[in-house]
Image (cartoon, rainbow, N blue to C red; front, top):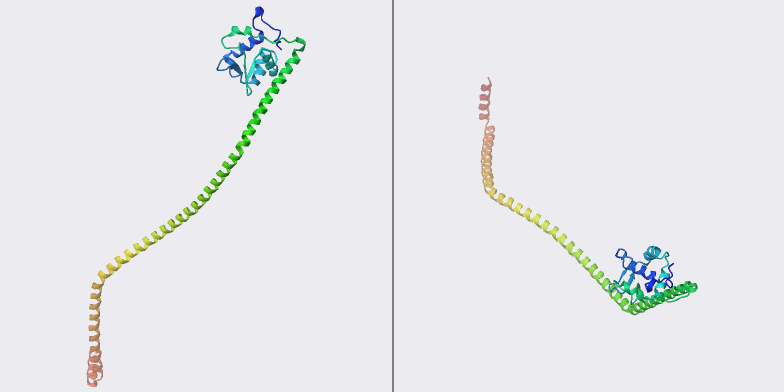
Length: 263
């Protein structure tokens, strides 16, 4: 691990630790992991896991992120936001590399540096947990204040939903009744149309029959007259025949004629 408290550049230059940090932050190819902030007066570690596993092992030969944060603290860097790994130092600025020499690390005895680093790491972690605790407590407080209103809103929504379902059920029943009425009316209208067609056909038959009746009646009357005339002649003929049979002389005379006819 780089010893940030003892490695200084010659002639009062910046430490290797600061130089390597500046190189990482200023590298545009790893902006997805670490980069300058928009104000260019701080840097942001966007992916701590990737930063620890790849960059720390490449630049500092270790991957202990907490130790790295502690080293930053020894150089006067401070965290900007509790929910983001953003660090700043008044002399750590984009495009102002020459200011790095003004950043001085705290003088810590080498034999005790490891214990100090661990202590700082624990303090950093404790601060982070306390900030998270405060944030959670604030969220819980806001949630508890919000719950009564939210419950009232939910109850109101439930009532509106039940009312909507009731109206929907009534509307569905009404629609089914209207549909049934329309179907029955359609069937009734079809039946009426059939009856009207039958009526028109009967009226046409009656009209044709009425036109045919006079001629038919005249023909029947003629037949009746002819039948009556035939019956009258037949009756006369019958009477004449009976009169002949009652006269013996005529019968004898008739028999002679018949005999003479067959000889």
